[in-house]
Amino acid sequence: MSKTWANMTAADLGSEIGKGRINPVDLAEFFIDKIASHTAADRIFARTTIPRARGEAMAAAGRAKSGQRRGVLDGVPISWKDLFDSADVATEAGSALLRGRTPSADAEVLQTATREGLVCLGKTHMTELAFSGLGLNPVTATPPCVNDDAAVPGGSSSGAAASVAFGLAPAAIGSDTGGSVRLPSAWNDLVGLKTTSGRVSLRGVVPLCERFDTVGPLARSVQDCSLLLAALEGRKPADLTAATMGSARFLVLQTVALDDLRPAPAKGFDDALARLSRAGARIEHGHIPEVTEAMALAGALFTAEAYAIWGPTIEADPEKMYAPVRERFRGGASVKATDYIAGWRRLEVLRQIWAQKTAAYDAVLLPTSAILPPNAARLLADPAFFTAENMLALRNTRIGNLFGLCVLTLPTAEPSCGISFMAAPMTEERLLRLGFAAERALS
Image (tube, rainbow, N blue to C red; front, side):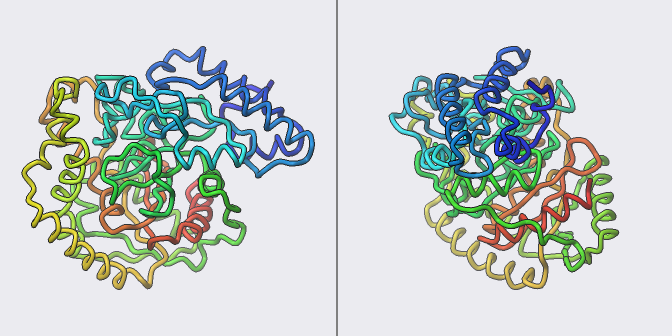
């Protein structure tokens, strides 16, 4: 049994299964043992699904032996954020309000991924009801950050990122409403894909804001993200072999996205731009004023929908929630229906303007986050600091959600600092090819 399995990509593990060099049962047991022995496992996994993992691994081993594998990732174990329904296993979305909630069926994406041969290791901790980008959760657990154990890991897919970064799973599936895949990916030096709203099924996924909610993978490579997206949809993965930086044209977004950058994210971003340029990419800088207007709409649009979904549940027992997250929800209570409807109508216009202004570019670039992961103890002690850091952490990622884009974040040379590539809606395959080439240039 190889000790390197914990650091291999999901694609490489799957390839080794296909070559007969790894037995899926041995691979599942390896990660089950890793989880059982890791000192932070209880902070990363809300609950494991060991009987299920063993059964799925045995089935995958049988398919591998008979030459009937269902894809590259058949037999590869992964983790799932604790808002994807799993049959007869509690799905609590990081909240005491949902304690004991046990669905009778898997979420549609989990069903699809299981049919494709992926092995479910268990459910990972997350921010309460997914409504914070920091990953701090004093109610259930705050997972560690791979680069700073005293810092938060990013959220809300906090445990998802930690499970991969600490070698407890080859890859993870999370959700992204305002940055919840990309922030923890960036802060834990992973690749994260925010899919286009409406592309991947949300059936059986605990909602936050359904008009913004998306499902996406967190992994060690762009190839892994491509394979995982295909597995979530039950289709063939994109062909990444033709990827090149030579003809790429990028726009660096100067409006909002570069304001108040802390030194490390600024350094990582500048270094990444230089590497992309040396690889042949054409990089331009420009302003899109509509971003400022869209950001001004964000508060009402996100909080109004979130409170409409969760307000009655929260108010039935508000003391069960961490106060800063609870009050963020409550911000939606005062939003008028007229303002919400008008806001969405205006946002649709702004999305059209964005599409026109960015049509000539392969992607729009920006730092994934303006800040490094903040200290968890200080966030707990100072609610004002929590609010300020949460808003700044999510500022850049939220742009992708507001404009309905697909977005890929890649690590830079600076730890916990990512660079994001934002592309037009429903162009994930093209974005992944671009990201595959960018990944080589940045490494």
